[in-house]
Length: 279
Figure 1 (cartoon, one colour):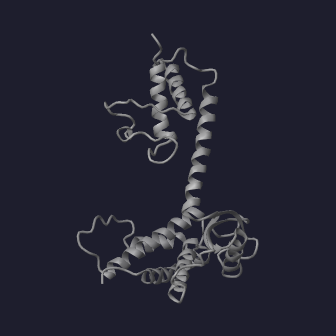
Figure 2 (spheres, one colour; figure 1 turned 60 degrees about the vertical axis):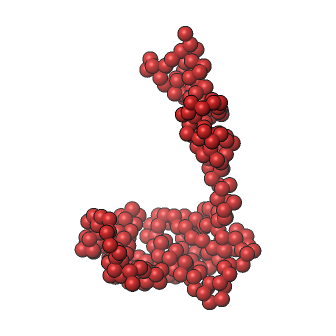
Figure 3 (tube, helix red, strand yellow; figure 1 turned 90 degrees about the vertical axis):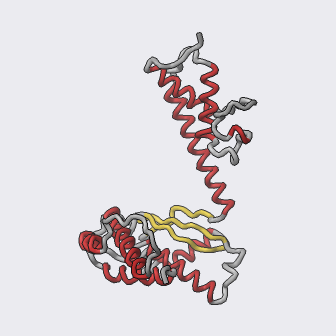
């Protein structure tokens, strides 16, 4: 056998967690070096054996733990405060539930939520932010399930009040697209406001109109609507590569953020004596 099941990987990780529990970052690093974690292993030209795959799991897991400890400033490693360890166990429980009779998956009325909790006590050794997932018919039900599973002695959240929920997001295809669109709009608003504020009072005199339109078109394609198949701008098939084509028609797209960025660039070039003006 030259592949590892999820259960085998989880078991290997659990053994590593027990091995390094209570160790310092330096001690974990020593084990990482001994496992060859700092060496380049290159591309494998033949299938890996089970032993080689388990060795790779060990290297990767020790490296992840060491990075977690150094990043969070942990003095010693504690699996109870390791968010990834809890996520793996959660995935294991969900898999066992499906195998034990819920093969069709969770109740269709249940919604999967991503729950983000923030540490309230800076002295607490856990991670500053923890992300977990729970099913519920509402946000309140999902949060209650997460707290029940994660709060208390030995739980990821620890004692009640050690972590507070700061974000709950519905996990679905529609909600993900909606979140991406909202994030895109917020980002564009920041760009637009920053560009307008920066350029105000520094507008170039008589900018080349054709150049301004082409820069507007470029920024609209590259920044505002970078996907020609999704969003408010739908270039024709031969226009999908930023208009670099000799085929007619020469479609140009415009947007407020695109024009603001175009003026921003022209003002910057004008400041350095490089801007083109109408002749």
